[in-house]
Length: 161
Image (cartoon, rainbow, N blue to C red; front, side):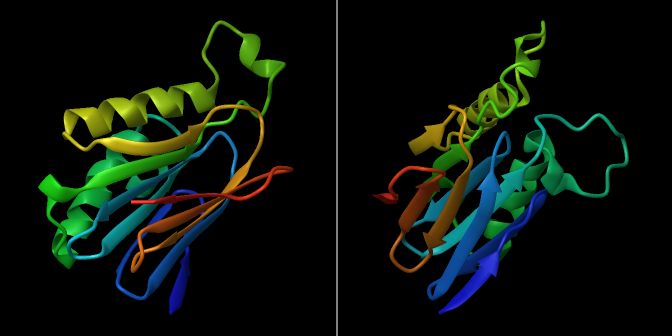
């Protein structure tokens, strides 16, 4: 069993005996895509909703460029887009006092665009744990399809694709 740690603005894909993990999701979103037939999974840890730079080198930093990159990477490994299911985590309002400004909080904006892009790609979100005010750690086993969601100060919850 090999564990790949996915940092902020990063992604990883794996199959069979691979575990994908991301730590400390605050306003960021952890997006898991899974093809149960091939046991190919991907995890993307986005920081912001949209890329504003024309020549951004790190496409995994943003939902609007990171999700297509994750889809392409999984396709190269053998995943079939028509079989993909999604689970999304994070998007917390970590700075409650600051987010009362006229702009929506980064977490809320990340949640909204992630849902929009997945919907546009006909990828159903079958599990989510988003919003609130607490950070999360996500551990995903590509072989079993099991996700452990560790929310700060709460008990671990589980979901299986």
